[in-house]
Length: 406
Figure 1 (cartoon, rainbow, N blue to C red):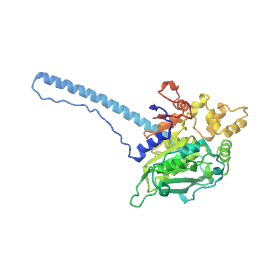
Figure 2: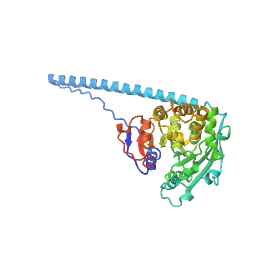
Figure 3: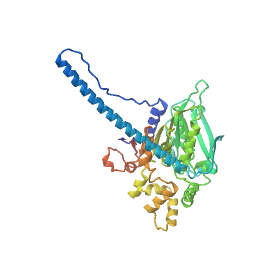
Figure 4: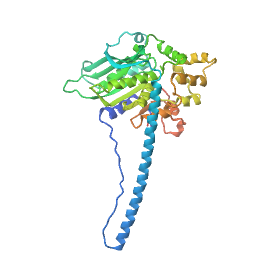
């Protein structure tokens, strides 16, 4: 486990991770074994024979010690695999518990999205300026070489069962056609897939197939600016859906079904990343589905239980405050407190603050490459220990991001 200093261009961490794990080559595990050496000197002197027996005995002892270490590691690996299997089984059971009728996965060709209400109502922001600054590889006539696909995947019945997908890649001739690495990018709260287009273009310019989707009740899946808020409140009151994290994770499992069937994508080299809410989607999708070979959540991973126990839940709660205000009123409270927070999480995302929280879900990503980028306060929430226990050089939470890698 290693904590590295912050980099003001934190997106370069992600680019480096995906480049070295997806684009260039497969990761190769190298094991160095110190095999015991047995000495069989066949000299006739008594002294030499004694030395031979001593060395051989010591070598046997070393071999037995190494075998015990190996057996211990194998047992630990077995336990870890069993824990991962148990986590995925329980998590998938919850994900499938509030699903409308499922239908065969179908693909519909769409058109580029323009002049939608959420695009018109989106005022320019610093986030957009940062996004537009993503460096693309210098390719002549890049726009002409860029291939854009707008698709709709039908994964289940109902309005939210139609998943909008945006895919960017470089055109290739029939001779050049090959399976390429892919990266899925996920937007934050109240954003949409087109917002991430500069990132998609940057990765497409480097040979990736870059994908983005609209998460549940966002973008093309929203009727107006309150659709997501209304869905959260409805989930609290009825318990019929799981619009916070879980329903979009289900979409990402279905997306993996589609991506692994494409002839232009290498199914063993699919990465996933996201920002804030998108970071949480990436985190849980990778924990649930091993087909996501590399994962990098940005300011998304946190300890929900830790936040409740340490009265640090306000930041996340404020991002979707209307549902907590509705719960406060329904519970007859005058203010949002830790009891309200815990009841909301248990209702709209069962297990989020217990058996599916980060201490249990993050290990399920191992041994796949993982990069977590968070502010230093969030790192403490993840680790559950004071920062002074770790070597960490971070500054303010938002402006300078530190990286936590495991």
